[in-house]
Image (tube, rainbow, N blue to C red):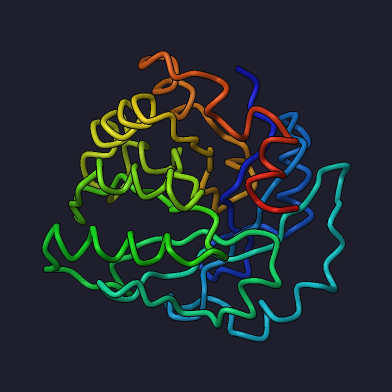
Length: 237
């Protein structure tokens, strides 16, 4: 399976990432990608850029190094009600919006029911395209509910390459993503692939993603990043 797009990556604007937009695009080109999403951490993540960064993205050319750039955000899910940390209009004006749970913003100690509700409420927002790293065992939830909700709302669920690194702070990621992929096969729910790169050498790095896709014999037609036209349709481009 050839993966032609990376729908989750960060430039140095995110604060704890280390490469420029051009460096990220060059790395994506070197890996043969057609498209790269730069989804900077939204304002409630410590050290990231502010609201005006996201409101000014129209000045950024949408092609660099021959790679289509998708400029957007990784918004933070703030609570079990699905509150996020960018305004609706700002989200609608961007190319792509990933919504994720991060410990500094969401906190710890929520129940699986609360975590499930948080994801469900976020997926009801039509301007949220992707649920980022839904694999972290620190925030348990009902995968069957989330997969069914993704199908109902047209939200993409992410296979996150960075989550499965040995150094990752996320817990139980490979086991969790395999469980999610089996449900996605069962209910025919599309997924997307994100490197979650924070440095250029990791842009388009799908080493772990490919391993789990092959392990569970996941159908190519359900991987939107294997086909540019399919991805564009899901993102409304």
